[in-house]
Amino acid sequence: MLHWGWIVAIAVVGLFALIALHDIFQRKSALKHNFPIIGWVRYLFESQRTKIRQYFISGPRDERPYHLRQREYVYRSAKQLPSSTGFGSDAELDVPGAWAFLNSAFPTLESEAPDDSARPPVIGPHRREPFQPRSFVNIADMSYGSLGRNAVQALSRGASLSGVWLGSGEGSLTPHHTAFACDRVLEIGSGLFGVRELDGTFSLERLKKLLPEVKAITIKLSQGAKPGSGGVLPMAKITAEIAKIRNIPRDHDCHSPNRFKEFRDVPSMLAWIAMLQAETGKPVGIKFCLGDKRFVEELLDALEGTPEEVGPDFIMLDGAEGGTGAAPPSLADNMGTPIRQALPWLDNALRAAGLRQRIRVIAAGRFAIASEVAFGLAMGADFINIARGFLLAMGCIQAQECHTNRCPTGITTHSPWLQAGLDPTDKGTRVASYALRLRSDLMTVVRSVGLASPAELNRHHVVINDDDRVARSLAEVFPYPVGAGPVAPPPFAHRSGH
View 1 (tube, rainbow, N blue to C red):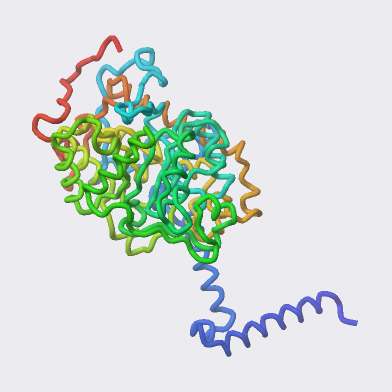
View 2 (cartoon, rainbow, N blue to C red; view 1 turned 90 degrees about the vertical axis):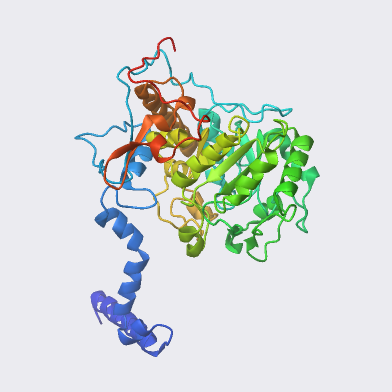
């Protein structure tokens, strides 16, 4: 009788022999045909390349889209651990593009500007139901569909605990978004999910049923991950619940058109916005990734000389840095304008047209830590929206498998097994902790500059290195329109009596 060890050895050898025979006779892979069994090793390492690079090779600031230092800040903030660093910064502070705030000789005292003292601007003050946000930084639009139910519930709970608003994403409002009391902004994409009939036509009646749960409405013209292309929800991720909420079929991938059928130019878009504002009483804005600037120029020309209540109440500007959605590389890598270029340009365009106080600007594009939020506000935003940062707060490990339905942390998947590891109660607390740490650290930056509110940050408070590694004021790199920008603060001017 053979010893059990020999039996195992023979079975293993037999298995490898079968694999080798399969490799030799198959014709799809030349590598496996020419190098049986060994060829599989190459594919194994290729499938794990992102993880190997992340854990063993990359430096603390090498990775994209978020490097280790950014992720560490989010993880530690979400767990309410200290996020301070020791032994100095490991960032290269003198390279081209590096930026820094100009700290004041006489910083604002915390008693003069407590963390909860700054009040963000009102959105849509002329509407029947204006929206008064409670936070300068909020949760960007991420659809239920792209995200699983536990993840959306965690975001809802985190928004409720921290006072940030929660964007619905174009997949419409769901019971998971409304699981906890919080401010919500409804996004309507070109697919009209949740506000459409089965044939794809717009339904004002369905929209009105959602209104009690939302503070504002966003019309998504395009997004940073794939500007010029509609969203895609793979058939594998379309559950019966998602199909019902979106009012779509389940037998094929869900594709959004690359633009709205309800309007085709600026005048018809403004007419549709006006209809929504009148019918809902809510602030209505538009979301886009900046591309052809003539669109914005035509929009501002159309609003010139009109009453203040005419036009979008806000612009949600998405950077070409992308997000959690699936996108073709040709669009993700080579379409649209990055937020650092788009934001100051849009801010200047609104200022030059005399519309800056009329239209709020919400910016999104790879913001994660408080100083980056402050930088975005200084560049010209009224609010900063964050998507992936809040996913990291829930435990995302940047596996970059958001579009595969195999998210290892259970965030962007509908697999019951993978979602089971994501507890909405615990992760919701982490979402809130991250949001509150951002708010506190943002005010630390504000006070260090000698200000009392994030709303006071502008380009005069930031310097950025040019190609010669010479620090220049951000207001010099992106000059404000003559007579339409904030005045540079006088040196050493202590602001007393905050």
